[in-house]
Figure 1 (cartoon, rainbow, N blue to C red):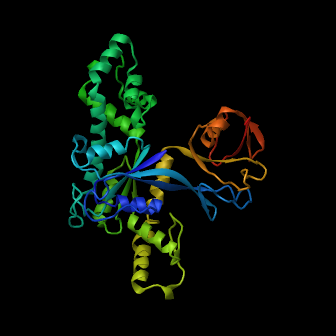
Figure 2 (figure 1 turned 120 degrees about the vertical axis):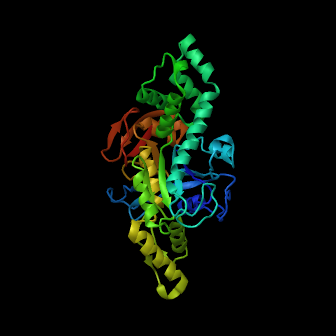
Figure 3 (figure 1 turned 90 degrees about the vertical axis):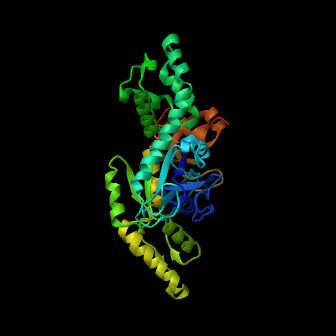
Length: 397
């Protein structure tokens, strides 16, 4: 699974990426700072089973902070998108190609209205952030439409003359984008299209199909970034987007708090609504003022910096659950004695055997049975997993 960080240039995408991954992508106040896509690992929050199971965990592929498990998910920060990117303007072709494998998108929008449609700096409040939301969806739609229309006549003809399924053929054409046959099927049913005569579909119906496929195959969270600098009139604009999930966000504040925590200036957990200054006497007045600004203008006003909320919400939209594979279901350890070492994100509905394959191909190939560590009951290969399950896999290896 992969999350894509998207948006026009100069809105804080790389700052968001750095804050969420603790990476060090280049950050500057001019368009197209990011040319090559930055890749990293973000973390979602889930309650760690260590508290309910009364153990002290020793995470390996994740982190546990005060009973909250931070579970990894891949992320990509791509080049900024500008109007007419689907025609190749700016770095449009590269941007869209980099997004092929993203399962969900976090759209970073400059809520302060201080970057124009091309990503150039302008006066605060002079650009409408709603226009950016509309244009990004439009660009992705036209990109998908271009791919579909490229071979449309051939596909339509094969469906009508050879009895091929339009859903299957479109899915095959779009498979490299992470779009599945069920996405196409759902869109066709929603729009009520006649699958026996696709050649008679009107252009607006094909575009409607494209829009619906984009909506269900690449769901979007909107991060209203720079919320601390945004005029109230622009922050209220988010109420106009009734069909979108919009989260006030200050990526700059999250990055600052993470850096302060690493330097031992504050104690802070990503996603928290507060932080604690460790020793006021050892920090400068400038640092203290900056921290108090974040407390007043971001955490108190919006409840968090919004960065972690965006990640958590994106994973919720993808309907992913977290499961914990262990070797010893009694002590909840792996073969090295680590307690609850690994946490894996899997789609809801995944089975015990699916988990076995995720851990190691040989475990899946030689799967015998699994044991639910909560109930100590034996479960079969097709047993659907639940969020927070701790599973021991028995295999003939």
